[in-house]
Length: 379
Ligand code: ACO
Image (tube, rainbow, N blue to C red; front, side, top):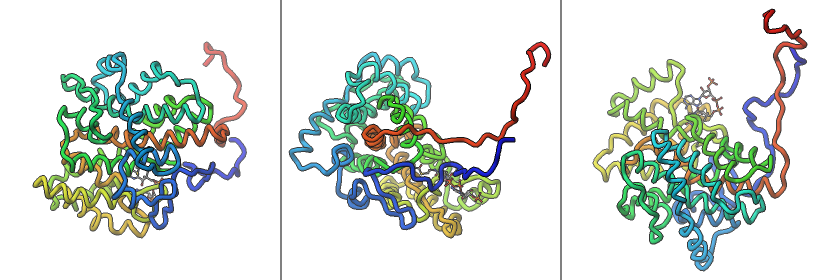
């Protein structure tokens, strides 16, 4: 055994490893600010385009700045035919894997790929934010035997995504639902995927590699995968009266109710409020109120005792029901999260590059020591 007594912070819990101006989180009271602006204001009043600008340029744009930004942003949505062909090759994989592969392939065509200056990283972040929905939509259509739909420069980011996915323009309400969802997912401190992206940037690798890593880390069910799992659970439960028994069995067998709990929030995740209200309204409009009833039963009954332990709903809990009611297949839930998060990953890489230090922690070795090497024919 190696020596003992190191101060190990398993899972890097409660460890501050740098400073940031991207977002402020007070997990005890459930407060979230993007560059100083409260998420409650932003979710109700701002568009995703304004958020991308806010994060990448440092403040909310005026109208002229937003118009100029939109020219660049909307003009960056196309992806090369070669990347579409890569998506054809991998058409049977999970959409999150297709997104990861597509972003990786895009690096072969980006003129700034090896330039890690702040300006080039911002340009690449804008391009990747604009191109990623095109990848997700194209892959989805290809796997369904359909031709990809070209981006529509007349639509905003959220509306264009739904348009490319379905081949038809969304309603204003559908557009705003996805817009708000993107706003809520845009940035969130040192979460696992942003940390992964920062580790990549800290080696002075490039933004495409960092975003590929962000997508890979986000995929796990303990991170971005939870929304998909929540809706699978709601579908398994079927009706509100089955919720109690289902959840008790799950918890008694040591399982976790997805969409609850958070490493930082020990109060309600402030993003959940905006999706809760919208999930309820959409369920009523679509004549399917029971999904919301199942979710609120879990929240207000089964999981109520967990509040004393700081376990509340997180952003993923109601998101899945919204996507489901918009008839978006469940394996697209995580990619949608990723589409919203690319500006946050980009900003964090910009921060990492601007005052870089290699991210390289230590592990305490607990294995055998000084073993004698035995030649293979004598083992
Ligand atoms: N359901 C039931 N029990 C839970 C849940 C849950 N969703 N979450 C945490 N707990 C319990 C754990 O079993 C553990 O209990 P114990 O102390 O008796 O062993 C205790 O709460 C602490 O859990 P940890 O895993 O140590 O807490 P951590 O901060 O590491 O985990 C995490 C946070 C991974 C998000 C966890 O709450 C979880 O697995 N939640 C479900 C998955 C989920 O919703 N992920 C999305 C997070 S938000 C996001 O990434 C966008």
